[in-house]
Image (tube, rainbow, N blue to C red):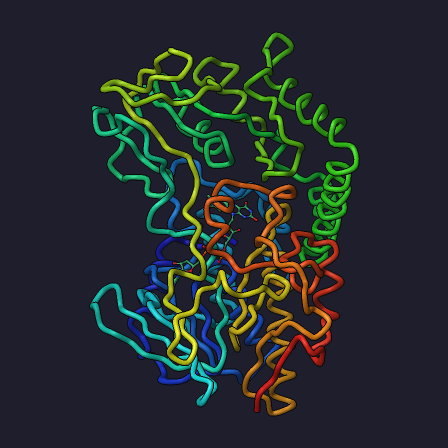
Length: 508
Ligand SMILES: Cc1cc2nc3c(=O)[nH]c(=O)nc-3n(C[C@H](O)[C@H](O)[C@H](O)COP(=O)(O)OP(=O)(O)OC[C@H]3O[C@@H](n4cnc5c(N)ncnc54)[C@H](O)[C@@H]3O)c2cc1C
């Protein structure tokens, strides 16, 4: 699995310069992250003969795993389920960004996907023509500024859910007065040196949990400043059943499948219990943290969230590394609110001041609805907030388009694979019947259905979704019109979607 870095770079260059874009393709995939590469694989294997290209803004593949370069960057899901179902994962379950890119690079190489990918192409607009039944996509080359136009019958949106160019940093009073550096993990500067520095990390989600153990040994001290606590699951970065099966000489294909099933089985039980007995689960999670911090460490308030488990993503802490830093005194946690920045640090509402040379704002993303692309339908600008989602994949009044939005509570890629199966089935169905367009539409029986925000905040409420909810399509009160966050129902429901249902309006 380990591939020399040179060959990854060589492949990127080859594909960037090799081919000019065709004028027209059957399918245009937006983005060469884990979803887009998966989409390309599924198209070649499930819909052979379909012409397609992948347009990608960056100069290489990987999406999240390319653009995030902060120290310690790694997955917080296991790669048996965050990896594709079709390509065995053979490393440790929690993987670094570099390992994930190597894995994706192998998928590209093994399936000759390179020739379909055009890097350094930022899509700026997409216009649907009902007369021609096709999309016209305008992109600009980020290296030459050249404008590129491609038409496509179908758009497969794999652009992720947040803006890669900049993270979300709230505005605090006095930021301009601060004499140190303020950095966001999403745009980690190459020249920053944390050695011997006092660092304050604002936020305590998965990013902070990854970054802090990675920099703490070199810093003078790292303070994690959080407004409210997060749940963590400390655990070993290994999966015993995988190791046992390897010892028995079982093939990697089998191990991948068996380990995926075991992880998903355990996660289903955990998710169910988080709903049915949240207090018990909460106590178990707190006990896991206590086991690492010792009986004398007062978990309250730093590690005792007020919300029920699973309402926000739970950060996995491999080998308890975050807690080792805290237990050693190199890192500490403060639960408080920022009053203002000062020249030398941050003044808190409690009156305390945190001195800092560097402040890291691990404060999240800017939600980006469909790649910041200006969409229009027959000349009229499209506002996705006016549409209703069909199972979180398609949108009313938007023809020939599918969006891949993965799971929050399970690995993203589980859904990317399921959505890919749906797209391939839909494309086949259209081909068989000679249909040139498909658009979801509310059915007569949906008349009067209540329209709600994209996600139920009672169910899941991370900041970036709450901030961006008004930009997102609506959901209806029936399963067809909702973005279910439940892998365990979708794995059975999505393959059974009846493509002749009147929710799909086809055109010839
Ligand atoms: C630090 C971090 C860690 C994460 N860890 C996990 C994890 O462990 N498990 C998990 O399930 N999820 C995790 N996630 C969520 C993660 O983003 C997804 O799981 C997954 O990587 C998303 O893949 P994607 O291909 O859908 O989107 P992305 O990785 O966002 O890739 C989208 C690609 O589309 C390109 N693009 C966007 N707009 C345009 C445009 N207009 N024109 C051309 N190209 C465009 C982008 O440049 C990018 O390369 C993590 C997210 C972050 C930020």
